[in-house]
Image (cartoon, rainbow, N blue to C red; front, side, top):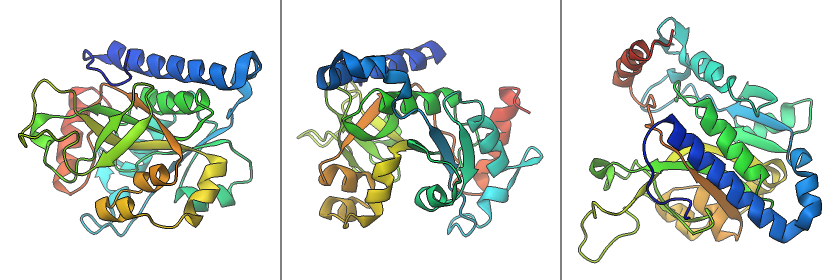
Length: 264
């Protein structure tokens, strides 16, 4: 079963995709490391920290991390949601690489949690962490969801294609795959990349030293620098509708959603 074939909607579907990704990764790990790896599974990449990048000087929305959402700053809302994840040992704010140097403990996995996603689902955080823990040949993990047809040609909606083992093949701002008719195929399960991602901490120290790559520069996507340098990236599919805050008008939308979901 492919990691990114079509799926049904609902919370149980999200959990099913996450479990499938972990099982697939564990199978690969067994092939690489044998039974000894599986015995040590719980200890592999077990120390996990979540980092919430918070940039005040956003070009589209200055001061965005501190914007009030139903009585609390958005950065606090995101932090509170992230705290519900069961795989995180610690959560902080700042740039991932910089924050890693400032922490007084050593961590194996660093999760980059977007600060403008105050409704992030903790199950997604746990899912990408566990998929990375189960895939020792990967240095990076991320999540995708189904792409809406109206977003097919939106360059701000990053698309992704994966292989049959759930590893990323490519990311693009354009529609991928792109058929010869130049039209959206309503039967094809296109994938939308979600901003959340986790890294092996050792790789995160190497990443800033890697030179920019042609595909990365052309698409303006940092994930491509990882792939172009030959590193592997694990991908899980989840049933999730992204509700980010990009512009001031998004705040009211988020607050209305929170009221509908009875989230105080």
